[in-house]
Length: 348
Ligand SMILES: NC(=O)c1ccc[n+]([C@@H]2O[C@H](COP(=O)([O-])OP(=O)(O)OC[C@H]3O[C@@H](n4cnc5c(N)ncnc54)[C@H](O)[C@@H]3O)[C@@H](O)[C@H]2O)c1
Image (tube, rainbow, N blue to C red; front, side, top):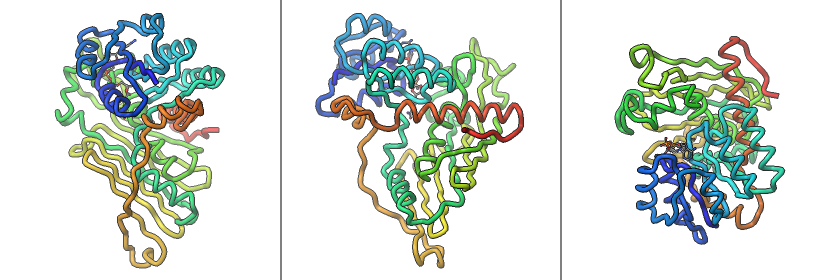
């Protein structure tokens, strides 16, 4: 697979590193509207060809697939252009900025027969995959309750840089720059974590969102800081279980932490993913009488990057697909409705 990396900012370095390590994959080119960033990226990852626009790269055409690592609002037009030119697409999350656009991308991709996948990164967490296996095998019995959280702290810590001055954080705080705030940025990950890990679909949602005042007039330069910083969500799952899902950029002391707890009639599983590692703990069988939780060792799983390369090789699409990401996007759109109207809404 000859790969074009579209957008050469922060996350693109992960794509370059992971894809370059896969046998049979070559990094054919990079695209960025910022020439300085593109040059540095090409040098850092030994990429031979660079372009100032996707259009210029498509005119050249010497690649099979695109890793779309542009800001959220750019995914929609660029992904559609790439698919129309016959290129497979591995798109960053969220697939688009709303369900309508995500659905349009899905329908165009599915009609083309090309590979279409979304980088819901936490599918790479072996502990999450194992938790799903345990739950869907029936080992913990019927699921009654689910807790999921995604905690970040970059609004209070400079460990990842300074959001007051760096564009890669400022666009994430501004609706006009295409961000749905915490909900679109990390909400999509935790909704996937919760539903994939529990093997259940979310079928009702009620959310509260909050945007705190962060600068004079809540504005820095061209960026209006109006996208949400935190959300809490009460959900029903399709088997009748209840769940709480929440995320925030104000979780002081937690750089990037995801938790999932799935409670069943015969046992429970807990996944914790932190910047320094992941853990799966379970309570099963007789242990539920003593409340004894045990850590479960897991084998590594293929990454999304590896599964995308394999899908392009075989021509058979893999999960997480555009369709799956569009369905998650729908929940995000509905969460915004529930905040506005202060009422629960069904997802189907
Ligand atoms: N899966 C994950 O865990 C994860 C983690 C971080 C970011 N992301 C996603 O990755 C995407 C990029 O995030 P980032 O942190 O790298 O942002 P970033 O701002 O650091 O990088 C985006 C790059 O895209 C470039 N760009 C903008 N418009 C373009 C266009 N039309 N054509 C080509 N290049 C263009 C920008 O100049 C910039 O270099 C976002 O959608 C984000 O949500 C995903």
